Amino acid sequence: MAVGNARLIDALFRFKSNLDSGIPQAIQVAAIEALTGKQDEIDARNKIYQSRRDRLVKALEEIGLKVTKPKAGFYIWARIPEGYTSVQYTAELLDKIAVAVTPGIGYGKSGEGYVRLSITQPERRFNEGVTRLLTLKRSR
Image 1 (cartoon, rainbow, N blue to C red):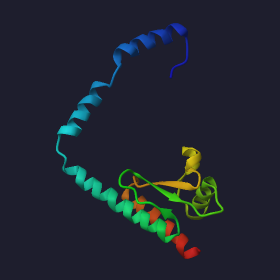
Image 2 (cartoon, rainbow, N blue to C red):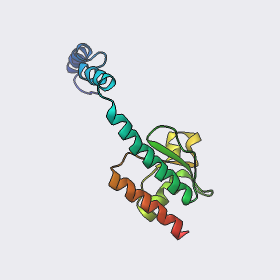
Image 3 (cartoon, rainbow, N blue to C red):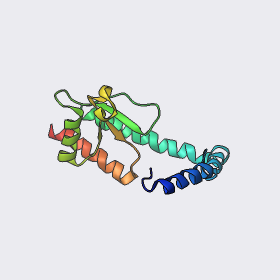
Image 4 (cartoon, rainbow, N blue to C red):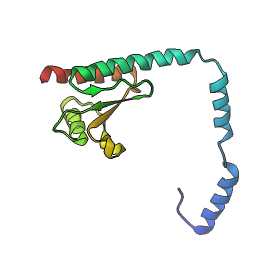
């Protein structure tokens, strides 16, 4: 977005329209390489995410949340306990154990009653988050 002098904005619009209509060439070249290049890193990366998914789902179930194990993706959706809104439960996790999750209501009305957790943090931080979640099991 750009705001300013109408003549300058018009010039910027005409310049940008000619410069980057369509997908930029650098992104096209990167996509070609990603699709046609060596694929051996993909299996290794998938194993990492699968392991993280499984550890997080297990931890969430151990603290009493209902989870359907996803087949793909970087996120886990967990059903929160009765008596909370997704915002309240998010705040409680942040206040009690310093774990940040996303309230489901942020994704629309159907997201209420859930929180979303990510498995994309660096390994050390991910493990720390799972360990903190498991402290809820001991404190209940």
